[in-house]
Image 1 (cartoon, rainbow, N blue to C red):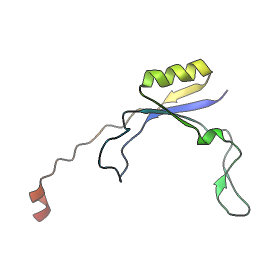
Image 2 (cartoon, rainbow, N blue to C red; image 1 turned 45 degrees about the horizontal axis):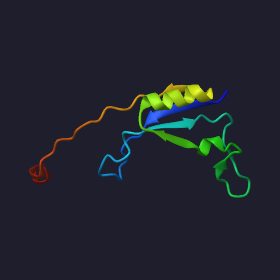
Image 3 (tube, one colour; image 1 turned 120 degrees about the vertical axis):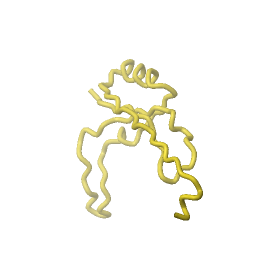
Image 4 (cartoon, rainbow, N blue to C red; image 1 turned 180 degrees about the vertical axis):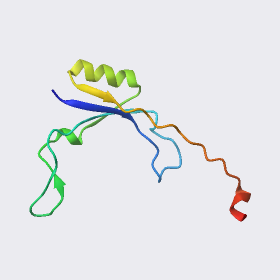
Length: 93
C-alpha cells in the first residue's frame, strides 16, 4: 500500500505574493532510500512515484482522492503565518 503526504504549500523566500499557497498538495512517500549514482554522484532511485505531485483546491478533495485510490495518508498541518509589521522609518534607526 502506498503512503502519501498531504500538505499546503508555503510561500518561499523568492515570492512576494501568496499565489498557489491556498492549494493542497498530495505527494507520495518514498519506499526505498535514494542512492548515489555511480557515474555522476547525484542522489536518485528507481521510483517514479516520488516525482508525482497532485494539486487540489481543498483538503477534503485531497483526502477523498487518497481514500478513493486506496492510499494511506497523513496531513501535515500548515504553519501559522507571521506578520512582520514594519515601517519604512525603521530602516533609519
